[in-house]
Length: 212
Ligand code: B12
Image (cartoon, rainbow, N blue to C red; front, side, top):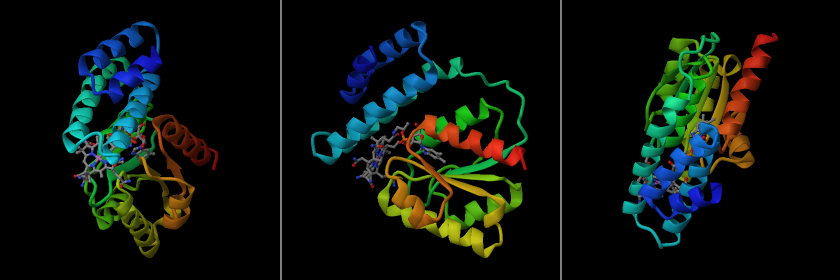
């Protein structure tokens, strides 16, 4: 059934995707598992787009279907959980308006008790630094889906250093193009390509900070 969902998402078959999501929830799969299958489905959409099989309208369609998936799974994610006292700043980097992945990560972080300040999309590096300063957040999450925007992530880290805030905040970068090379180039502390890795990193930072 997982493969069926992957294929339906990749083929942009909205009715089938949403029906399979309902079925998977009934069968006991977690929202996290379902969201990740859909994420892998839209990865195929992206691949087909870059190969010229799909068009921009298909990317937009994949966004619509993903939003439909989230509307079904969100009520199955607990929200009224006690706060863990940790404050996070999150946003999508300047030049980039992709926010589906960021919003999913934020939703799940809130469901685990983190307090998240969402700066939205197309956020200039200076604004990230200002937000860390003003909120006293101990973790900064930056989403980047467009490779040519990676340089601006490095600028955030450089500006944090200049402002004397680098040691006070862990920086996590997430998105489709991030990898070890991006981590090294930008100087961030962690990177994640999916929500499971993302949550593991935040929980790890939480544990480290709590044991100090
Ligand atoms: C949907 C989509 C769009 C939608 C975005 C809708 C929205 N509101 O987000 C629209 C149609 C607007 C769009 C526009 C464009 N897109 Co687009 N898009 C996609 C697509 C198909 C899916 C992205 C997505 O939502 N995935 C689903 C989510 C759940 O996954 P995710 O974003 O990866 O997020 C997960 C992880 O990465 C991680 N994560 C994400 N953020 C964060 C942050 C932190 C802190 C952490 C820890 C983790 C984390 O956790 C998330 C949950 O699992 C991708 C293909 C792909 N492979 O990603 C192309 C893709 C990203 N787009 C691409 C392009 C080229 C464009 C356009 C330039 C197209 C154009 N000609 O106009 C524009 C750019 C607009 C702009 N200035 O930003 C390219 C980028 C190539 C590159 N490497 O630079 C891709 C890769 C497609 C491709 N293969 O060519 N796009």
